[in-house]
Length: 143
Image 1 (cartoon, rainbow, N blue to C red):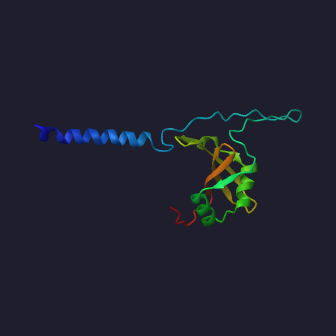
Image 2: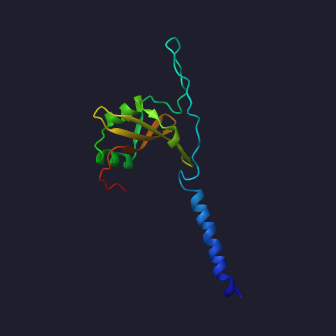
Image 3: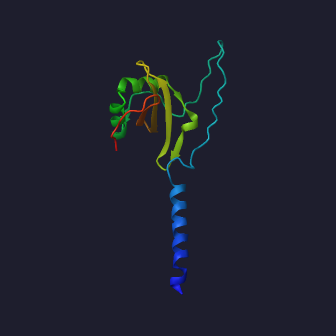
């Protein structure tokens, strides 16, 4: 009798495992919508926007992956700092998982590359997770 129901049991276990993997993937269903409407600044009044992280660039940590991507895509630390200082946060790409939130900051660098820097703020540090050239697909062997 057990042999008769074994395929159904295995199928149910596979479906549960598939569901668990899909709900625990980074970013798949865990994107947090953020209100992106910011009131316009007037000449008489400067609007102060609450940034989701401190852009003070004292403690920047680069992951191994970010360093590899920077090398592949010909982006140096000065360009990363430039984007972190002056770039705009792409609120539609903010992701959150068990490790915390990541924020994509986009801008055009001084050498005309359209770049997205993904950062994860942690206490007094800003961790650069990855660096993406939005215009050019570079050959890269980062793991």
